[in-house]
Length: 117
Image 1 (tube, rainbow, N blue to C red):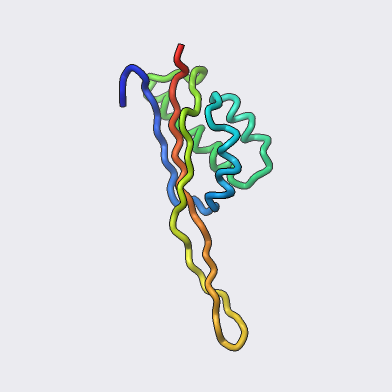
Image 2 (image 1 turned 135 degrees about the vertical axis):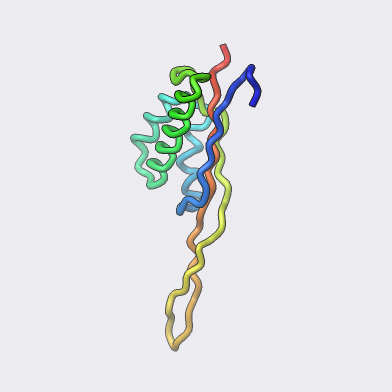
């Protein structure tokens, strides 16, 4: 971490949501301030929104404990989603056979920084 531009990086792994659906939520909040991101996430109707909102709130709580960054000047400098592993399940089919079900997971990374003056 560089002292001239401090940042907070927080990662949540193995979220039981597909990366495609998570990207639909994070693309509108990329590059926005903390307040704008919270307002957008509260009014989006998608299932990953509470997960992202909780992770951003956790990152802000971390900045408050460090007291290096102020809550009013924070913005989301980087937010990305990577695909995780699949949970593999079996579904019974006709004539004693089975087919596989792949339940996707993803990893979410958020980096918060102060706005440059």
